[in-house]
Length: 234
Image (cartoon, rainbow, N blue to C red):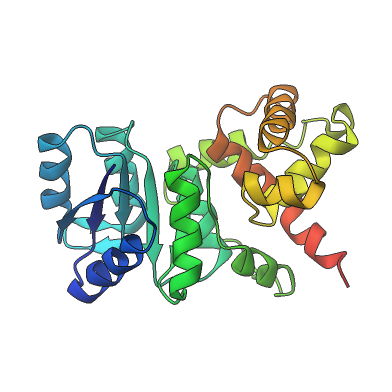
């Protein structure tokens, strides 16, 4: 598998490569320090399986950079690796279709688990950030999305007209755990189900709620179930 690491800090790139060496997988890594270098690399190697990208580097400005990246290379799975540790950055990244979000403060084992998930076709989002946000006071006025496209994405991901009563208890349970940052594998372990059964329940819930893809499902689950699920744990 081919992995592109796009970050303007050499230490970060080396640290990520060191973690990937411990995954016991045949991974071929490429590096880029700027958006232009990353784009050129993606054109030259059109079979790259995964891209790890910082939100801020030369030529790449946070969510605008993600929009440009997803517009130009929609088939390349993207994981954000960022210094930002708040649920707003996680959700706004999800809006742009990323499949994972890894805080740069994460320890080696945490990064390793996240990479294992995304390389296996799962999604991976930081549960500790999602749970921590539940106990924080909401801001006086929510920040506006970065663009009209982001507004549409939020509206599509969180539709108040969707009827949760149409879901079975198991489907709500799967969404609840997804909203707390659990991977499909972790949900399967928690509910004592197979990963395939979890995917079936998730797919059924997405169909009933008219959710288009996994990224939108993650955004919906975090927004609807993340805080509530955490608050109920005591």
